[in-house]
Length: 451
Image 1 (cartoon, helix red, strand yellow):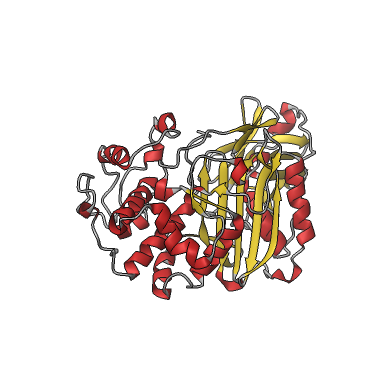
Image 2 (cartoon, helix red, strand yellow; image 1 turned 120 degrees about the vertical axis):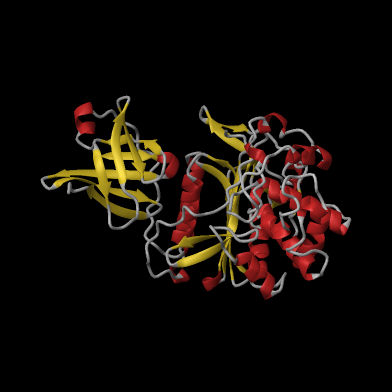
């Protein structure tokens, strides 16, 4: 559902860049400006971008409006709700309190909330790494009916008490916002301070951040962004989650500049000891303690994604290059992961064609569509693609993924704009083939040979 409290737990989609020599020596900031201008001109996104290398800001730009109704533009210091990026802040506070001896990774949930199922077996470490087995409350069918109303700690805990365990603690990873709401409450109990105070004490003040805090009702007068969905050729304001609901799982408000300062400082051991940071970075099934990891070419980036209402954000740090990147959006009408790929591809000087948003859909005869149907494979990616017709329309489906519709912009060119996918078909003597284009990469596919 489009207004759900969306928690983007990884940037795993940024895998399509092949093993190229990634160097920032060719960073073309003007090309990045043009890319963002294109997104704005075509109503594909409203967002802000910040890049920081070795502690120094090297790029900042923003497009779109923080308040569409009042025609107020996004500025450098416009604040965004950053959703699950909040989990990095919560995990950092927890690890700092562990360093101070106020808390332990082995503390049991039963010491704080014994009424929750398996509380005597669930540890702080399980909560931090999403291995508790506690149901994700934002997946409840009635979540959207109450998410805009304030909820007390007691009301949320009562909800959490009613959940049956999804699995035994420690058995596996399963992303659950409930874990980090509980962590936020536990940090408050141990410290006898509000989460907002802990955020200031352990992160904001030590780093001198100017625009990071626990969120409240949005105010454009305070240079805060409202969030939007693009419908009927215009940006429509999204619902506004009451920030008592996400708490330690997603209630932080920040800017891309503050996020790159925070993430680079954290991963350069300026907030926590190296031992604590390494513990956060220890990845199991794609997740550590408040951090996830994603590949970009041969590099690895640590960070987190976030989504709440119409906001979508990502913040990441690539240790090899001391590069921190943050993109915060309050309206997206395009595949957000492709925006990230575009920013990073341009930064590293990789081949990246600016998307053509002017291509118009055309009708293609059923005979010509039928000629494209088949099972395709490539040596470039570990994904086969099935092309088929359903209800008179052409669809494609990659291994282990959902099917998606293809829209023709030429008789041999089809796209799925939501994911930034273009498929260019060739019908030659040796058989039908196509080139898949996504995120600046081009991957040749050919029909599978019968064995």
